[in-house]
Amino acid sequence: MFGYNAITMTKRTVFFVSDGTGITAESLGHSLLSQFEGVEWVQHRLPFINTREKALEAVQRIEAVAERDGTCPIVFTTLVDDEISSLLEQAPVLCLNFFKTFLAPIEAEINIKSTHTVGRTHGRTDSSDYKNRIEAINYTLAHDDGITDRDLSTADVILVGVSRCGKTPTSLYLAMQFGIKAANFPLIPEDFDRGTLPGTLKEHKEKLFGLTIQPERLAQIREERRPNSKYASLANCRQEVSDAEKMMRREGIHWLDSSSKSIEEISTTVLQEIRLDGRASF
Image (cartoon, rainbow, N blue to C red; front, side, top):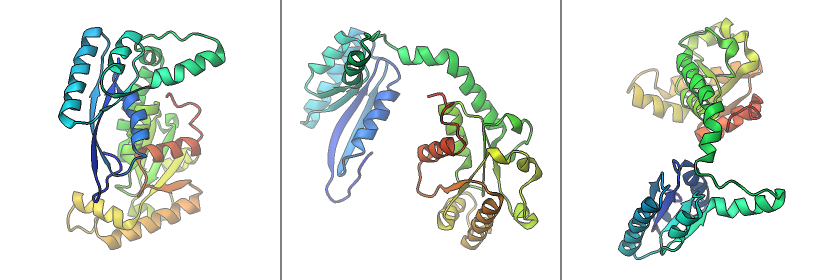
C-alpha cells in the first residue's frame, strides 16, 4: 500500500503482468505508485502470462475488476510478445508496458534490434549468478549473529552493531539480491567493557560496516522479543547504542542509523561504502 492518507483516501486497482515472475514489473510499478498520496492501491500480480490463452484469462480477470470497481485498472507489464501484449492493451485499462517504453529508444540509439525473447533476463543471469547467490546465502546464514568467525577472510562485508539493529535482514538482503557474502556480529557489553573490538574482527577491519539505531526504536523492538527485561529497557538501550557508536568512531568504522531507513537503502549504502557496488550481481 502506498501513499496512505487517513483523511482523503482513493482506492484503485493495479495489476502487474509478466511473462516471468512479475517482480520487475512490480518493483518498477511500486516506484511510480509511491509518488501518489491519498491512494490505496489494491494490487494483483499475474506472473507467467506467456501464452495467448493465459493472456485472455488475464484480460477477463482485469475486465471483471474494472466492471466491479467502475474505474479503469492500471496495468504494468514487462511482456515482450507483441501479440500477448496487444491483448491487454485492447482491454479497458491503462496499460503501461515497460519494455515497449524503453526498448524502442535503445534500439534506435545503438542501431540493434532487440531479441524480444520471453524470460531473457532470467536466462542470462541464472547460469552465472544463481550459484553465486546460493553460496552467498549459505555463507550469510552460517555467519549470522556471530555464530562463527571461521572463513571471515572470504566475507565481502561484516556488519557490526548492537543486537536487533537490523544486521540480519540487511545481510540476507545483500546475499539474496546481490550475491554478497555478508557476515554479521553483535557488539555486546563485554566488548564495551574491554574497550576494543573482538580480536577476530580487528583482523578484518577494512570489511567492517556498522549499523546503529535510535534507542527508543531499539527498546520497542526488543520489548517485543523480551518484554519487561533489562535487555529491552530504554536505559540499557541508550547505554548500548552510545557505547557502540563510541567504539565505531574510535575504530574508524563507517556506520549509519537504520532507524528510519529501508533494507534497500541500508544495503545500497553498504555497497557504496565498502565499494562493492561494482561487483554486485544485479
